[in-house]
Length: 360
Image (tube, rainbow, N blue to C red):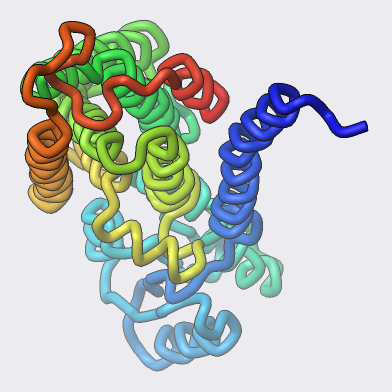
């Protein structure tokens, strides 16, 4: 006996909605495992401190031993190596000494990179039977021991932002685009303030420059929300999957919060150069631990994404006006919304909000 038509329709509806979770699980497995499961250093910059033939030979031996995992050079003084670490030019420096050699690191730049460098250079001293001293020239704060507070701050901002985008785009679809845009800016401000209060004053995960980072977070969240609102005009219920792909799968894995790009596959390392999350993470890390360095490049990255979001919203508004004009009858019925385009009358608001919650 064949199933009644309503049952088949309900089953088809359920299977259709299962596509998003299945695609999200597949995409997250590809992104997270691809970006994080096997960190491998490549061309990590290392210094050997000293001059003379013996130091040059040592540096060459280290280079030969590490191969393409490292890029080794020599510098004359400890001060030069320390300055290079504080300027985030190198990842570590080895200071040879007959009694006790020293490995200089900057854990605030990347705790996982510092650990990796220690594993790379530590055996050199051990092979000579010498104890190795560790000098951390840029340590993290006690309230942020791994230096990854900025990354988890990014995670909270991102989940709140793409969820807000779906909420505004779906539940507010009848509003004119300009009002949805104002809601995006307001929601971005609220999310940024609340998350910054929790990350900074409450937990100390942002030990300094808290509100400077908070201003950058507002640019970050507003850009994501506006991109989501604009994309919803074209993608409808597929907006959630698209936002998760852009601002979770690719964003978290390329942000540099867990592993620096020198420890990641080339694809994620290349995304780090211009992706939205890396702009916020690197700007925040610099403001907290390397205040002498500029953040102009990172701020430019955030602003360019904000400009992209304005362009997406503008294109969506134009598309909605054209759809409304082409589909409006001579006398529009009172129960047909005047704004919101083709998606305004869709009965899938709850479905989209639920999918957003599943993705979070």
